[in-house]
Length: 130
Image 1 (cartoon, helix red, strand yellow):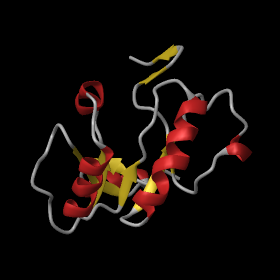
Image 2 (cartoon, one colour; image 1 turned 60 degrees about the vertical axis):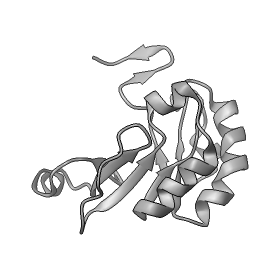
Image 3 (cartoon, helix red, strand yellow; image 1 turned 180 degrees about the vertical axis):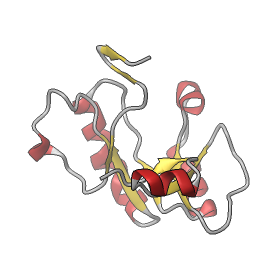
Image 4 (cartoon, helix red, strand yellow; image 1 turned 45 degrees about the vertical axis):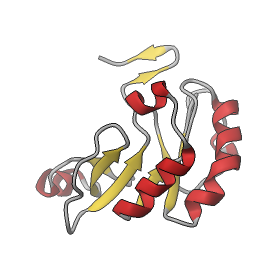
């Protein structure tokens, strides 16, 4: 089951049986909508510039997100796992952290360290979706 679908309207989400939510990132800060769950993510632009995890934690707390994407490394399961072990305890104090399952097509799902996971958006290390 898909846990959340960023910025999907409630009627379309219901049609597909997913939980709608509002995506809020450090680089695309918008006023949170009331009465809809929020998903916090660092965002690609902020990640490329380098981000302070404490600043990200402040965003998660400020918008009271239901979930937060734990920092990850595109296309690298091992490094993403290292970041998960380092930062998920902090995020767990604020919300439900989500593990981005990099290299999901190569890794045995029994090795996923989290209850909530997300797949990388649109692109994967050696697979490109158009």
